[in-house]
Each structure stands twice: as C-alpha cells, then as structure tokens.
Length: 131
Image (cartoon, rainbow, N blue to C red; front, side):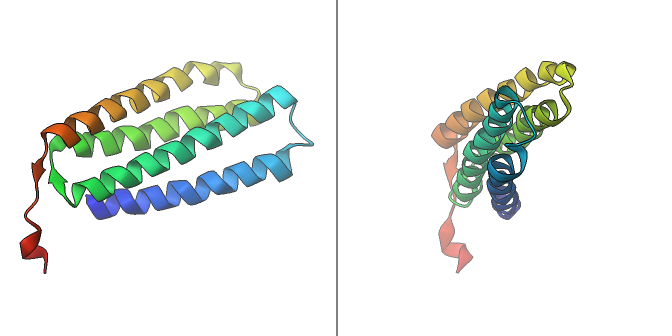
C-alpha cells in the first residue's frame, strides 16, 4: 500500500502542477476572475493533499496501522471530490457542483484525523527484514 500511495501522490502532484499552470496560462483569458480563483483553489488543495498522501505512503514504510491506509484513501477521495468539483465548477459554471465540494473537504479533515491517529497509535515496523 505504501508504494501505491507514493505513486498516486506523485501523479496527483504532477497533475496539480499542470492544473495550476493551465489556470495561469490557459484559463486566465477565458474565465471570470472569481472562477479562476475557484480553479486555483482546487489546484492548491490538490497539491497540499498530494504531499499529505506522500507522507502517508512514507509513514506506512515505518509504521503499521489501518488508520494510515484509511487516511490515504480519504486524501485521494478528497482530491477527486473537492478539487475535481472545483475544477468542473470553474470551467462549466454548473453551480450544483458546489454541493459536492464540502464532501471532499470532510474527506480531507477525516484523512488528517486518521493520519494523526495512525501516526500516534501505529506500531513500528521491523525494518531489519527489509535488507
């Protein structure tokens, strides 16, 4: 699971950079300033949570707790729901997508709480057998 989360974190990070660049260079002339801001918020939170997912993946190599795996899935789901809904809202103007965004925010919050719990309560992995 650790390698999977690190891989997904890398992909989300790359896509977050691409989304930010697309907003700055490709959308600036096509979106109202408020919608450009919405898009950029999605990219910013995607980057934050790509880094959080990277931390989960790396932590899973050192500690074992199911809450860490749950945290990883919550961060990934949060990116899809939160950032994805903001991207779509910005480019389509479909206001109903704003109703999805809080679910992504809740996934982010729950992910951080699970990360805290798993980091606190997790058992150290025996790294001597990895050589």
